[in-house]
Length: 140
Image 1 (cartoon, one colour):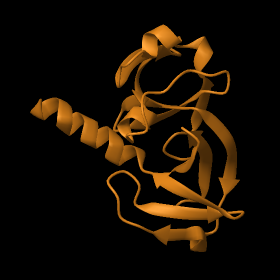
Image 2 (cartoon, rainbow, N blue to C red):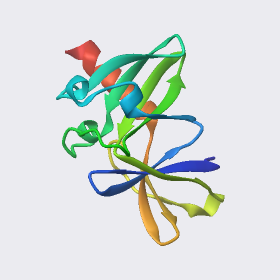
Image 3 (spheres, rainbow, N blue to C red):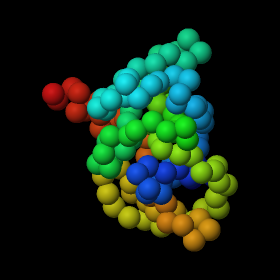
């Protein structure tokens, strides 16, 4: 059960992700530049001695490739020992949830919507995105 979410924006659309799946939030300007993200779906950076695969979440969710803004952030997590970072336009806040805040909806990367303070947020599941990218890479 999701206890806390990160509420974030990509291309003026509202999203949420389980805070436990991406517990580190980094400023992008320290780690990547606009030239480095230019058109790439995935790239790699180093953070505290660990290699982190950076994924342009806007591009994955068919919202167009991301531009870097002062407000852009990397949501960093670990899936089965592999570090990843999801590039988002802006983090709004971290919100504590109660279990009845989740409403179900089917879609490729967003199965749920969460209603928080009158906002409908699409819930992004990091593990599904990472596993889908791995499957795509293997089959390509």
